[in-house]
Image 1 (spheres, rainbow, N blue to C red):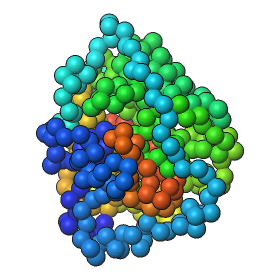
Image 2: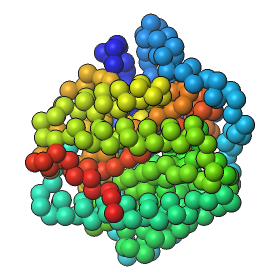
Image 3: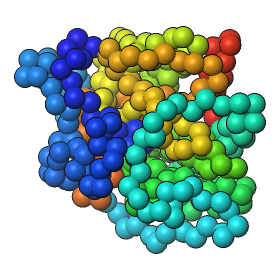
Image 4: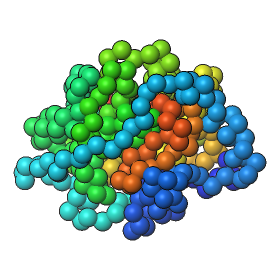
Length: 351
C-alpha cells in the first residue's frame, strides 16, 4: 500500500495487541488509543494518506449502507463462564492470568508437531462446520457458544478463547457489522443476518484456529457477494504461499481482490503464527504493505481477512472486545490455519 512506511500498525489479530505493546499490561482498548464505544480504534496515518484512505475506501458503498433497513447491533446479556473438565489440559495463559501477547519466533514444526497441528486443525474445522449448521433465525449466539463449548470439551480439547486476556466465552460470534471478537450473548439471530464464527481449539498442546461467515435465513444479494468475495480473497492468498514467498504478497493479493469489487480491507486486525502458542510471529497483514519476511518450510500461521461493505474504521464497544464498523456497514471474515510445505501450503483447518 502506498504510504505504508508512515503507518504505525495497530496490529491486532484475534485477541492480540500491537507489536510495540506486547509487554503491555493495559486493557486491550488502550492499545487502540480509543475510548470504548465512543471513539475510533484507528491506525496512525499521515493526513494525506488518511484522507486518501477515506476517499477510496470508507465511503465506497455509502448508498447501500444508508438504505439498509437492518438494525444496529446492541449488546445482549452474557451468561457465566462455562466449566471445562479438570482433566483437559489448559494453555498456560489460563492459569497465569497474565495479559497475553505475540510470542517472538515463528512456529516451525517437526513431524510430531505437524501431526499434532493436523489433529487440532481438523478438530477446529469439524467444530466450525457443526456450528454453521446451528445458524438459523431465533437461535442466540450464547446457544451457539454452549454447543461449541460442549463439542470441544467432549473431544478432550480446551476452547482457546476462554479466559484469554479475560475473554468470557469459548467462541467468537460476530454478527453483521461486527468485524471481529463478538462475545456470544442473548441476542437471537434474525432472518437476513450474516455471522462469523471463530473457533480455536487447544488439543494435545497445539492450537487450531479457523473461522467462516455463515448466512442466516434469506440473506440479500449484497451481503452474499461480500461474503463470497471475502472467502475468495482468503483462497487467493493461500494459493500464493510457499517456502521463500514474502509475507507481504498475502496483503497485496487480498487487497487487489477487494479493490476489484470495491470493498474495504480492515487493517487493524491481522493473521499470526499459531501452534504451541495461540499467537506468535509472523504478523500477517491483509493489506498492501512493505513488511519484510519470508515463509519457511513446516511453518504454520493463519490468514484471516476482514472485508467491509463501507467504512474500514473500527469502533470498540465498552466490553473491550466487540469491534464494529463505524458506519454500521456489513463486515465478513474467513480464516484458515495453513502449513507451508514443499508444494506450497496445506490447509490444516478443513474437514
